[in-house]
Image (cartoon, rainbow, N blue to C red; front, side, top):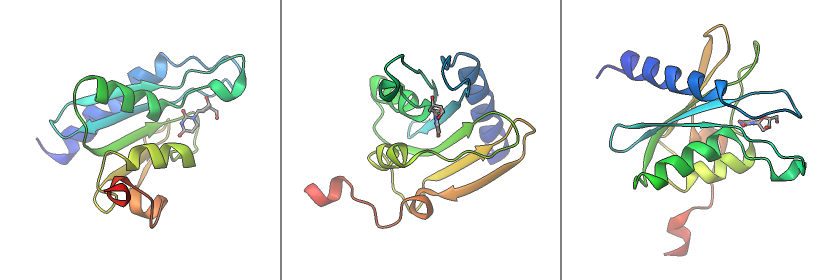
Length: 136
Ligand code: THU
């Protein structure tokens, strides 16, 4: 599968996930698509809570879906937010993603509502991170 086809598949998953977001407080809906090691793409949406800090980001939902499916390594995440802003995973989600990837090669793609995009490696977004290797 070409990179373009894969990316449009991830974009479709992230957009569909965003439609399902539960964001009554911020009204800021987010969708994420996580590319697993096995080629499957896992979607996630943000799920907020009346007790605000208990809300969960879209990326965290996608990670849970991947782990539930038995996949423990990911290669890329695509995140779609509202408007013209390109949104990158929050600090907590950068660390959560780091658990399941090689930060040097893992790609983070941000796409806005107009389809404009930018990408980084996870290493660029969370340099010199702490990971599973430190505990072995
Ligand atoms: N949010 C995400 O789901 N992912 C991000 O990368 C950034 C922020 C959510 C959390 C909250 O529900 C809303 O966006 C506003 O912060």
